[in-house]
Length: 170
Image: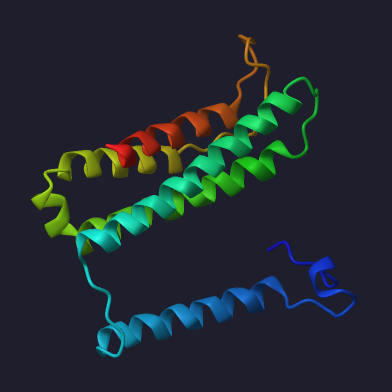
């Protein structure tokens, strides 16, 4: 969590803690899932809903690539870059989440994947997201792009996210 006791968004009122926000989100998600199971809420598993979800994921991954690329371009010359690990783990968490989401979507929208003959592409997307979310450097570096000795983990993550975007565009 990264919510401090006093948050600029809340003026001078105390902010809700991260753990409280996580618990509330978990409760809301469980309630939504229960309403789906009980039939109170429906989610049509048709092509149009699938496309809407894919566009949203693609947009978020494009933002992730832009954020990492901008940071690399502006900060790769720093000897110590204290923000690169924050950007890396934020992007890493999103990619992990999208790997899990893609697996669930593949199950839910199986008929759409088969009807449009994109099951192989979908499998490649999941494989790329899984490979990326298993990348665990010991220390996150934002090394110079021309360096032979200093890796740039942000570029590696950005490259993998770009590969995922290409599968979403197919």
